[in-house]
Length: 493
Ligand SMILES: [Zn+2]
Figure 1: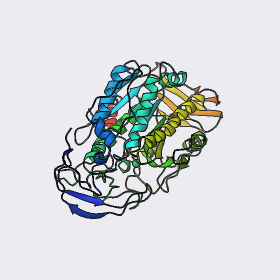
Figure 2: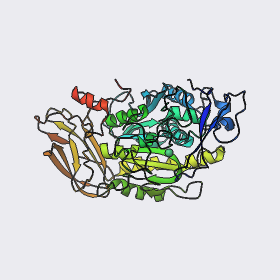
Figure 3: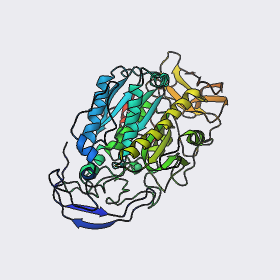
Figure 4: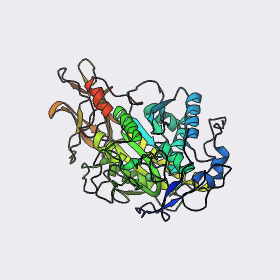
């Protein structure tokens, strides 16, 4: 992997950042020597994070350390090479329940990697899909560890723990620990001021400057750039730069393709350090569906989670500060996913005890959400015609009001849909196409188990693409639909 360290760097200098404050940037130019290991780094702001992380220095470049159960994952933070090696090692050691999938490549050529965890990882199963994703902001190293910890638990406890087996057998769990590998590399090896963006050479000068890059969590196409100057920035040097166009970044496109293909019932995007559970829609003035099952679930689950190591519980809220173009709002608006941002505690602490305590206290969250799906009230099913051919029709839970033109479809490849329900009681599902009701069924949704409602639609109902509405779909989804095929996870064809 190459990262260019040898340039005179333009530093964005700013005071230490509470998570909730948009930093005021004061720019100054500094010439620095190459921050190689032999060459001590300059003191002060802009030092590569790796230079003060001795645990990382001790592990960098080394292969994962095998244990009787799997691998050690708790020795240090991980750069993109280490994450790649670890995921490959896990996939090799647990081939019956995991598969390594490349979702795309970054501007600097690094793979964006997922580990799919399921009891039949090479097959598409009739199961709900779940996303655990970290490292959207390159400097939030702990968020990467939250996902790696989930991988370790799911794979290493599968043989011995009944609950883990239930999750792995019952779901298709997509783990993307490092959504922004170039950004993490830059934070570790160029400047710790590069704690957020993707380090793409946005000023086009052929090198990586600390002001380069796009904030991936402002780059998604739902309400992109519509929240005003405090929600995201059109200034490329800003740490909150939203990019030149919606979904302009390779990392954004890779996640969109995966989400469009898999139709996650729930997605957890891990961040640090605001000790919060952020519920869509997070954009000011954007009204959520009513009832809002995403909010109801968060309020159910948060009080049951352990107190975080800073003495606080995860606080359920819409946002920490004004935002737009976030991944969670796009997943919600485009696909109906219950998409949370999970803000853990502490920002890249060097103390191993703090790191482990924070990871351990986030772990029960994803477990609680998987259990909530399995316990219900939840409804799922498949939409097919009388020949059993899947149809990606629009799926509507009657009684839910929507205000953003949301149109949530069944999964293209198998017609499957999954919906959390806010409360038990009668649930009616409709399959629709262009406003026409193709099929309708009702059942009693209960606490105890998900309720299945398969829908059969007329054979003359033309196959729908299942792509999100115009403006929210990836280019590849639209292309696959035009060809009459379903989008699959992986690099752009
Ligand atoms: Zn973040």
